[in-house]
Length: 150
Image (cartoon, rainbow, N blue to C red; front, side, top):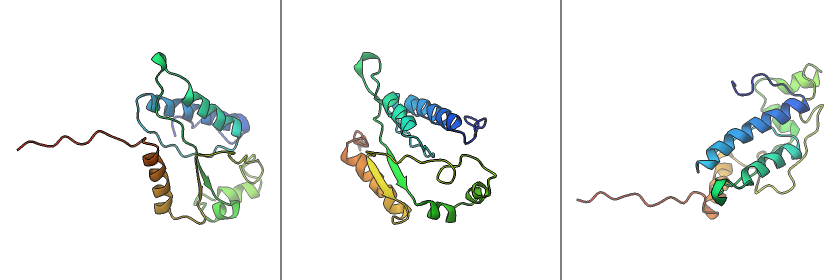
């Protein structure tokens, strides 16, 4: 919460939220560490910014861990049923302005690397889809463990 506690739901705040998250995730990627971030990113332009930031060449022409967009696709009705904080109810009552899916738009990703329909996919199967993709692309390749000599 410390990174973004000063932000609300306005388009400008959402843009700044994604910018901050992208910058921090890029720091991890530059160190060859996979960073998995989970957030509501309703605008394509913000997601495009995050992708471009990650794809920018680093000094010496090296690149960090690539950007992989995972779209966790859930109908608004299902998201409302899963809402433990009651935010959708407050948004429908007009208590939270510019709430994604209620009073503010959500621009669906055009070409996510992974598309998961969370109303039809278990958490375990969703994790498997993501891990399988990362393995297929070789992003999880690691050197074999060193065996102890006896």
